[in-house]
Image 1 (cartoon, rainbow, N blue to C red):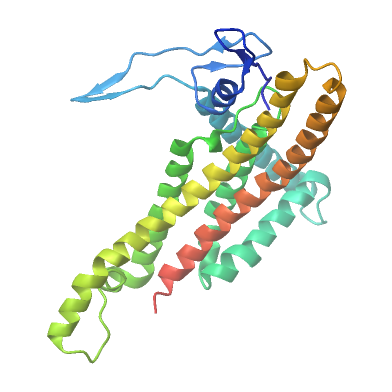
Image 2 (image 1 turned 90 degrees about the horizontal axis):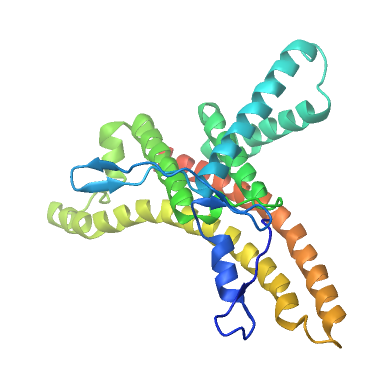
Length: 292
């Protein structure tokens, strides 16, 4: 995680722990490096009619691009190594680990949840998992930032998954079958009853479609943000009570031990949340492809 700087209250009454928490978890146009923030370039905004779009890079954008670059470097390097060395024998090291992930997601996530034809969605599911995982882990390194702690980032990922889900349903069911996932009435009912059921259930079905990306975005954002708040709050106890001579070492030791335990848990959560996002995307694709 980034270096921790404790702000002081105007009256000098003590550290402002709340401002420190918000400063380290929110987005900004600077990257913290010890106590010397590195200002990111500011570019003129784009004007699209009445809409003004700020295209200047931010801290979360930089680490999101870094995660994408690391994914590309790792997978391109592993692909080249496997092509040169492991065409006739089992891979070793990192290549073996990547192959295990690929096989697991193909067999136990994509094919198990999507069913027949799920192979075509394996690249997207794997990309989701590793891209989110790298963003999660970059927030745990010194001076790093968690891009998935930004609701805009998780919402964009969720919207991409929503697009993939709905397009897969349209391709599998056809236009008529896809419309039945929104406008549906049981067979055998009177035509008037079918119309009434459609009018009632169509808004519910649409809300259900929108609830899926909403749940994906909020779950990832909340879990990654909560862990950072806990770690920073525990470290902040040192600044709040470290001035007490008797309790100084007790507070410092307890805060460091608890923060270390939470950081280890955060590593597990980073993998878990990336897996849940990719797995639920596969489940939603499978549900709409087999709407019956």
